[in-house]
Image (cartoon, rainbow, N blue to C red; front, side):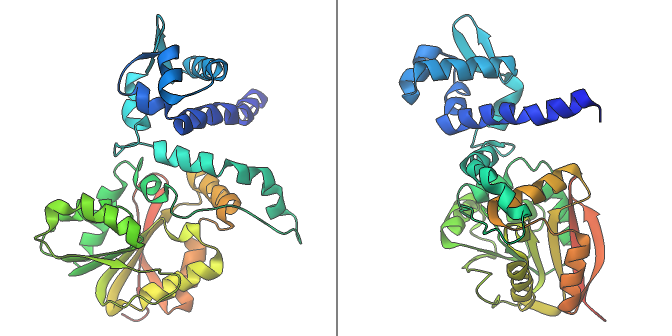
Length: 315
């Protein structure tokens, strides 16, 4: 990396924060629907005129917004990415980051022994939506990994709004499915899967940190869940999931790859926001070994995530 590139890297936080401000203000939700003048934006969103002028002009310079005459518009190629209600959106992830931005101001505490660490992290604030959006073909590839094990009953722990199960139902309608998450998140999933009422789809409201999984399945999957928990909690989650797995069943863990830039940055983000980390292959293999499991296969689900399949030793 050259000095100029390092300077740009450090400076980029300002650009990221400008986009986060716009998400928080609801600016993109309005401008994705129609082009608006500054006065129209200020009036609809009840914003301060001078501050809003600075923000939208900054976004123009960043090529996030275009300006034609007096009207501002979201660049056409970015609309699906910035609308909160589209599958490829990153708006909920940006909003999640914006809500937790203050945690970075005390991040130094995590690197000094003996310092008390304090952070504000709401695991349900935009989290389910954020984790399911902007993932590209990840669920397509993860579904392929699961189906390759020829399961009869798939349990998705930390299912969020059910997009993985919806992907599976597109090709495998004869299997049993169980979604496990908090009750309010499962209500969203029920709405998303309302077209599949005639299939064997079940919803289990359960806190996987606090209790064992009281089901029997030959395939249990969790995707980008463990990184939100510290190591003792992550180990407990794995133990509680394994309780519901048939003896010859397979446990599939889809997580960020810490050997990629995105995975490494996500691990730092988890540290600052909830005192946790992204658990790499070595850490997961060690935790699984303690539970009597071993990794039998692994497959990339995106350029920065990998699915690890594990079974009980000797099976």
